[in-house]
Image (cartoon, rainbow, N blue to C red; front, side):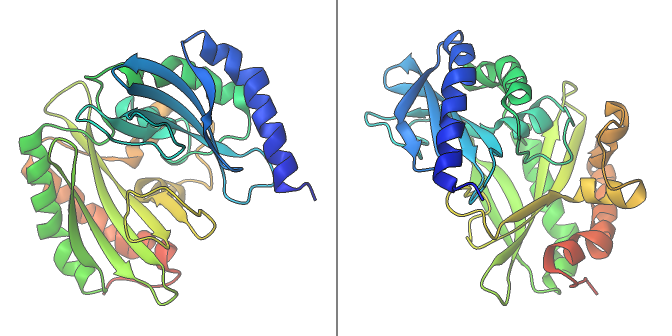
Length: 300
């Protein structure tokens, strides 16, 4: 078996050989201060006034191959460190695959959190979508929507989903994202010390009156659903829409036309349609989502 250290060394060498020249052309340089052991490797571009644009390659926990994801970060700090975030009102952070999925509505992979095995494909997408998103102060954020509609969405989620899912041991929670955007989710303490999350994520396209949402299912050992730091050994995550699509069609959505794959999200235009779509999502939670998440638990 290949050791993690040797694999990671080869991964860093690949980044320096393959990724560095392509990112250098976009103004990003490899910065060893952004490295964290065998997991995180970062390229940085200064935007001025201690603001940094970061392209971060993150290897999978205990990976014996080069499986990785890409984090896009804009943050402000005097001292660089691997887990950089925040620092000022214009900070932002998201995975490249989340930007593809939620900002550009590109369903290139089975779920929003994608891990690549090869640099070439990832770099092609990164060059086209990554720096443009990080460096644009007005770029649309994953799950972003007009404030008044996001509040309506959060309230309706709690009204429609809350009573049923709370009977199964989940408690309703609400986070506030940047811009005071509400982020509704439900969490359950599991017997093994982990936490199960059901998160309702909303997005909108070019039409400001047309909205979409998906339901993210997570099981992990940390209580914060938006915390991606630390161990991924016991972490699992999936899109409820994508799981439901698989149940209807096939084990994989590879090589399926993009327009058909877009059906994994629920679409609505007003509150009446939102209620109807949430009821449909609740049915799929009962039939598919919670059994997958908990290994057999269902709503009554």
